[in-house]
Amino acid sequence: MFEEIDISQSARLDFAIPPMPQVLVVDLSLITGMDTSTVDIFGEVRELCKKNDCKLYLCGLSPRQKKAFAKAGIKPDKGLPRSKRTFLFFSDLDSGLGKAEDVLIQEEMETSDVLHFTQPFAGSEAVSGFHVALRHIDELHCTEFANGLLDLEPYTKSLELSEGQFLFEKDGRGGIVGEKDHGLFFIERGMVRVDKDNSDMTLTRTRSYMGTSAMMKLANDNTLKGQHARLGTIARRSALAKRLAGGGQTNPSYRSARMGPGWVIGIYEFASGQPPIGVFRAITPSRLHYIPFSTIHELEETHPILAIRLYKLVSHMMVRKENNTVSQLTTLHNILSSPAHSKPFPRSTAALRSIGR
Image 1 (cartoon, rainbow, N blue to C red):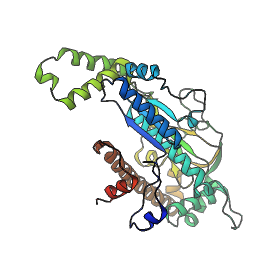
Image 2: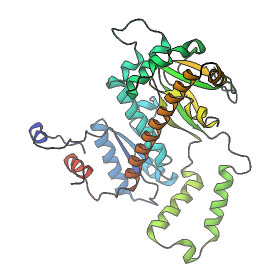
Image 3: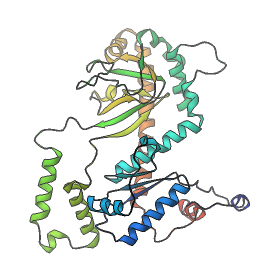
Image 4: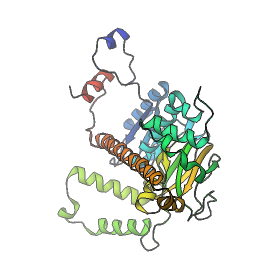
C-alpha cells in the first residue's frame, strides 16, 4: 500500500494509481481470540502506518483482546487532540469508518478549493450575505436559482453560530432557534455537523433491555440447529456476545453528515413535516440565513411564484442528496462485502481491480 511508484511507470498506465492510504480501518469484530505472534504483527502494522503518516483504527476488539494489546505495548494514543491521534480503538466498524471519513473530509477542506466557500466571491460586486449563500448553491449544484430567490431576503434573518454551538434548543442544549421555530437555513459560510440523536429511545426498550433479551436467547438456545454450527455464523454470534458483554457498546451519538456552503438545512423537515432526526452543531464559526416555515406558508398565499421557485430549489437539493446517499451506500457496501485479502498487493493491482481488469 505504501510503495513508491516510479513516475515513468505510472505514465505508461492508462488508469489512475490510487494514492497512499491516509487511514487504515481494520474490523476485528469477528475475531474471538489471537495469540502473541498475531498481536506482534499488529505492532508492526502500527509502526508501518506511523512511518507513512497513515492513521490506524482497530474496530470491534473485546476487553480481553485490548488487554493483550496493552501487554505488548500497543495502546491507543492519549494526551493529544483526538484529531491528531494516529492509533485508536473503536467499538464497531461504523464508528471507525465514520471517524476515517471525518479525517478525509477535514483533509479535503484544508487542501482543496472547498476553502473558497468560506470567503466572499472575489472580484464581484458587493452582495448581501443571503445572495452569497444562494450563489454558493448555484456554483455547487450548477443551477441558476440565485436571482429568482433574491426577493426572499426581506423575510430572512441572519444567524451567527460560534464553534460548538447548537442550532436548535432541545433538552437544555441552548441552541439559538426555538424547538418549535424551525425553518430553512441557507449556509453562507462555515460547517455544521449533524449527529444522529438517540436521546428519544423509550424507557421500556432500552439498549440494556434489548441486550439482556438477546443474551438470554443466545444462552438458552444450545441445540445444534439453534447454534447454526457453521464457522461464519458462530463468529458473528460471538461478536454479538462481545458487544452485549460490554466489549463493543456503540456510541449513543455519532456524526451522520456535514453541511457547508451550497446546502440548506431543514429541507427534509420542510418536505415531510417530520422533526429532524439529528442534532445540528457548528464545527466552525458559521453564518446562516433563516426563514421560518410559517413565513414560507404565508408566501404561498401572498407571493405564490416566489414560493414555487423555493419549492423547485428544495426539490432539486433533495434529489441531489438522495443521489449522493445512493453513491455512498454503494461504496460502503463494496467495502463491507469485499473479501479479505490473503496477502498484500501493490497499489497498481488495486487500481486494476477497481476497474474490473
